Length: 179
Image (cartoon, rainbow, N blue to C red; front, side, top):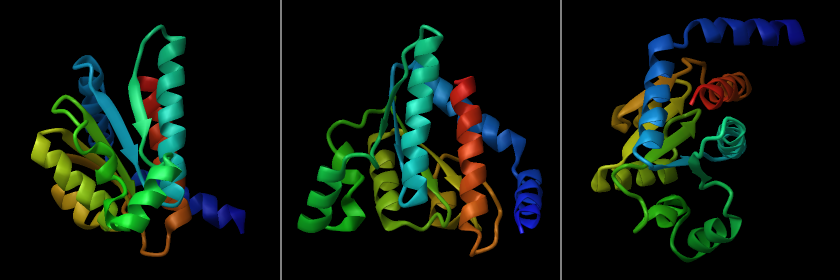
C-alpha cells in the first residue's frame, strides 16, 4: 500500500543527518565561489537524479541572476557507450573528467549502494588531482562512504532502492534551491 511506502520514506528521512546535508551544501557553495565546475554522476535511477539535479542547480541559479557551472556525466551517452565498449564500463565517468577536472571542481557522486566501480574510479581520480568529492548514499554507504570527503547517508535496507532514491532527489531539490 502507498501508505506504508510513504511511512517508510518518512522513517528514513528521520535518519538523514542535517549536518551531513549542510556539508554537501557548503561544498557546493565553495565550488561555486571558487568558479569550479560541479560534476554530478550516478547510475540507473541515480543517473536521472544527477541530470535532474544539474538542471535544477543551473535554472534556479539563472533565475537568481547567478551562474553555476554544473555537468551531469550521466548524460553523455555517446561517451558512456564508447568508453564502456572500448575500455571498460568501470571507466565511463573517469574518462570524461581526465584532463579537465581541476582542484576547484567538485565531484558529486550519487549512489544507493556506494559500491559502483565506475563512481569509485572517478572518485579516486578526483583525489589524484585534488578536487573535492561528496557523495549522496544509501544502504550502509559502501566504499564511497570511506573515500568521499563528505557524504550524506540515507541508512536504508539493501532492497530499498526506490525510497532511497526518492530521498536523494528531495535532498538534491533542497541543495539546488539553496546553492
